[in-house]
Length: 183
Image 1 (cartoon, rainbow, N blue to C red):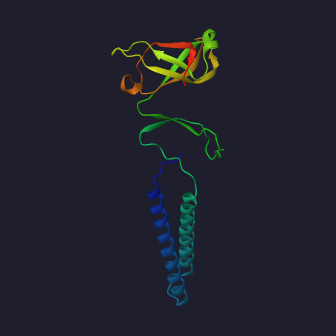
Image 2: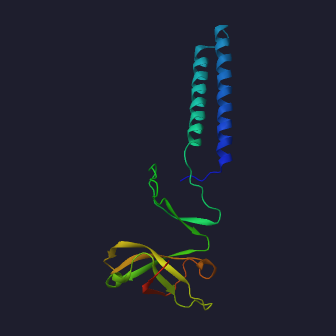
């Protein structure tokens, strides 16, 4: 994933084009000097190589201009990227999960015998925190695997706006409401 401002790529293209134009001029001068006997054939060949390299750099910059970039949001975090490198995005496919900077994602470990009540969008809530607040959230992802050592399944829950009241690494108790789902 690349995070770019559009003007960064414009400057890259402009610089690459100028470098290429300069290399073309230098090659023309080198050829002229060679014809007059003032420059060896090796020097002309070296300048031809520089001109080709500059042309490739310019073409790569132009190619990048036509790619689609994922621009990271100013007020949020990319919590999960659902694409592999160089994988095309299909219309309607989820590419990434964005969360606001003040949202928290929690890792829950649920006993396997209680997993029958767990599915995405199930409402969860923390017990009262030190400041007396309860934080509402919902299940976002469920691992299909049971940890043989602990007998638990890993579940992720998202707590919108919880970053104001809780911090990553803080331990809290979570209550799962079986018959209630996030709208």
